[in-house]
Image (tube, rainbow, N blue to C red; front, top):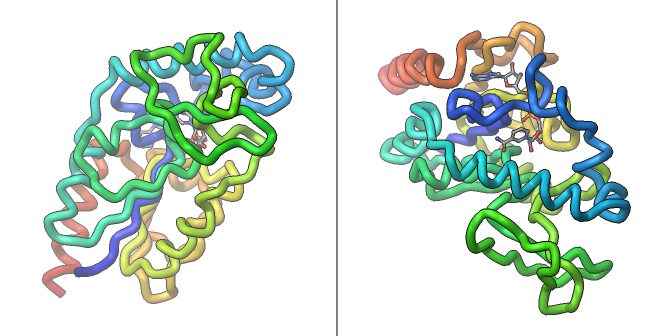
Length: 233
Ligand SMILES: NC(=O)c1ccc[n+]([C@@H]2O[C@H](COP(=O)([O-])OP(=O)(O)OC[C@H]3O[C@@H](n4cnc5c(N)ncnc54)[C@H](O)[C@@H]3O)[C@@H](O)[C@H]2O)c1
């Protein structure tokens, strides 16, 4: 089976009603990154940070996977599909994809905030991490989210998947957040590379990419025709 890597960003979940990051009316138009998504913010005001992510978790729980998430799950019938998502939502899981790597964490889980945290992730019961919740090592539980300025522990594993891709599909990411964005440039020369994003002409991405300037839900239909044609040739 051919290996398909799908690198997704906030845009794939936009049509599920989850705000993106940098769009004009995106999430961060209303929040300062440094107040909620950095280790410094956590040190300064953990209650604000917890309540920001508790709120996100509730919004995500109320959302449903859209036709794009569902399409990439169904693609497993024909390809060996690896999802690499920058999203912290769980919509790929709920759509039925079985191989998902969360580069920036998964909001349904908590982890230790200790200096040498245990490496376990704790499923969150309900939608909130309680302010007094502590990990087995005695430190408060924090969201399993990679904040700005933190390392991306899954980066190397994600890079290996991209290097082995026969087909790389880049969907709904502005490619502004590094090192995640660097993954889009690691597929072999011979791989088919496609970018699906309504604003793809603006992305700093080369001519080796087929550009599909559609929303994720509209674009998977075009993509499906492209993949069908490729399979016939
Ligand atoms: N759903 C989530 O989990 C979520 C939401 C917001 C931010 N984030 C985090 O923010 C970071 C932001 O980087 P990013 O590149 O993922 O997001 P981004 O907001 O920087 O870029 C979003 C991209 O999606 C495109 N887009 C907008 N609507 C779309 C649609 N309907 N269909 C397809 N594409 C659409 C935009 O043109 C843009 O290029 C990520 O690291 C992610 O962890 C996650």
